[in-house]
Length: 623
Image 1 (cartoon, helix red, strand yellow):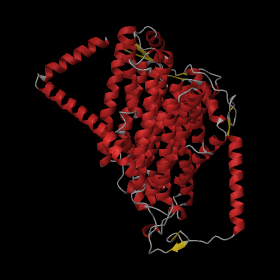
Image 2 (cartoon, one colour; image 1 turned 60 degrees about the vertical axis):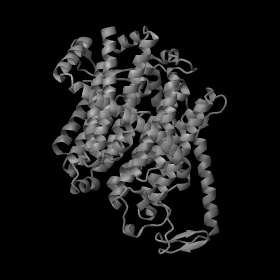
Image 3 (spheres, one colour; image 1 turned 90 degrees about the vertical axis):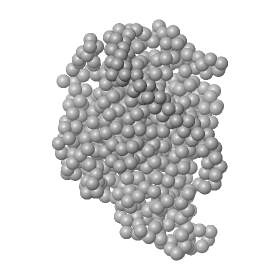
Image 4 (cartoon, helix red, strand yellow; image 1 turned 90 degrees about the horizontal axis):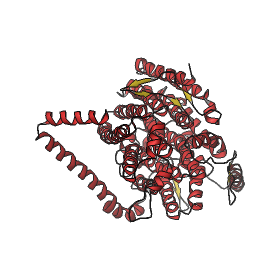
């Protein structure tokens, strides 16, 4: 039995335990331990992470309609599986104690949530281990339906957004299925080697068709523009630990598909040859600019959110733009930055979703206009959010700074100033919104109704604190993760980045985070000494405040949470409503018109006959 077989068996056992006992809060600890066992099984494949091994195969293989199905792990699969299992472990641990019991008492379906999480992990592992396009498509569909189940588990308004996700997911699946059917008709096989050979023989028109089909199918999962409308509310309304898991890794499966099919099988050289008429752009430039606009637009939508969960979920869409930009650079520095950002983003996004869930658990609300001053009541949760937003904003000393720096540096050195400006604009929007998040949640005056709030229990704090330790350590020593990324780049046919423990050494300016963090903490130390030496500070009660040289009592409210950034909203509100919302409404209206027209035409023309014809044609095309 191979290590991959062991991983699959443990994943199946986790799903079985969740199915049988998931509704009992006491079983949460066992489920978390089983996820930990899967991480240990993954650790036994450490040769994939070090580059000592190129592939580990699973024992079983099957044939469906003459097509062989096989599963194996390589460097990219191991890397994405590590993030998947880490996010699942943190989410399951968070659910194992007081949160799970409280969720069940309030009428939440804890068993369904545990089953949906375990099913997501199992289907993602099957997707990541796929050894051919057919097994990849099967894993993709299982993952899509598992994500739908996880979103659906909250009930209420989440059901509406879960079904909207399902509509998008079905559209993406049809795009992928159409591409697979055409490839099979041309190559007679869906094995990776045959598919790579077919891409090398395609005409520009055929190549464009396949590239757009795969980009749309995988891009819907990534919520790339213009397919971004579903993800923010769908992830935000999922129960807290489920949101943390989905936000950390689920949509990155779309990036994994792009890496496997468009980067590895098709190749970046093919994308470079697909020119866009009347422009100087090619298919790779197109995907890069899609990533750039995906970075900017959802990020500034996040600024407008007053619900902490929605704010984070919209950021999840935008951060995928960084990853796609980095990967589409195709060189050692940019691709390493994009892949590193997948890991870094997962660590701090999971921590941020969990800390917001802890705040909701204690206060009953995620409304940023109804919070404030919680730093004195939940200091460790404040620390988690502080570290998380520093990482999300891309500031030192956290790991988000390193991956963004690699992307920035590569865009400048490769002569892409406009795209560099786009990434900077996205970062500015991120900084603005995450300041709003921490200010309105933890800073300012404490509200009277929250005077008796207590810190989150250790069953919830432990996974959050563990995540921020990873955020800091991998910011201090990014070479730890870059060691795992090197085999990923090699397996995808990308140049491998030379790196050190502290970062990268470049001829005209590198990065050593050991020095950066050392100097940063030295500066903080000097500032702390100056502050303490003055000894002129005065304690202000959390129900009071201080501003402009005056101490304000509880009777004078001084917490500008409501309608945060009104000046900025005044500046961008008209542009947003006049352009972005108009385009979104136009897209929704066009799709709605097409759906209604198709439905009316289908019903008016003997539906049974048309259904039979479409089915026969589809079978003929595939066979």
